[in-house]
Length: 278
View 1: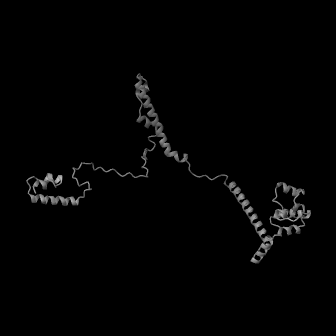
View 2: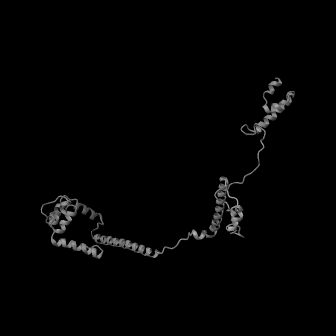
View 3: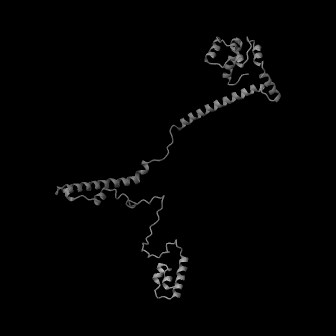
């Protein structure tokens, strides 16, 4: 094998470093060294291909801390804090032309007039801004008062709220008392055993139950349903007919004046006493 064939297997960088007259053993040793270097540096590494290093700046910028505000710059010195708010400071900082005071050199060109107008505007803005900055430091707390003042009507509002809560509690207490009284009255007819339940079911679901009720109530004709015994659900017209005693209902027609008076008296007593009447 010739040197030219061995020379073709080298990397371009290694081939440039090996002279053409190098012996075969030296070339083999050099190829072994290059192979070991290539094994140390993987192909995916940026240093696998040797490139000249570009000189870069070593300047390091301070890290920006987010979420914090910078320290405000002290505009007024503590020793002489109102120095920039005084009128003589503005006069020394932006003095006027002596020609303007004596009116010896009038401004003829438009450019001079425009520059004089800008200077007057800057001087006026400086005087106003300096005074405002000093006032903001001394008068800001009294202007923006964030204190929570007590409500002058808080006691009256508390009394109205207390009365409203007491009224609601009283209504709940009355409703609870009526429910307990009604439960106490109806407790005499409660079914507590299976025998009583079976007897009540046999009685109510009997074929002749409503017919027996109509006969027991001395109503003319036998009825086959609950409407024939107790009547249809009441409406406004039927309730007015019941009060005026002009109802054509069989149940209301068979009701005596005594039964009607008993119902009315019972209802009035329940409203007056606040409880259920047996």
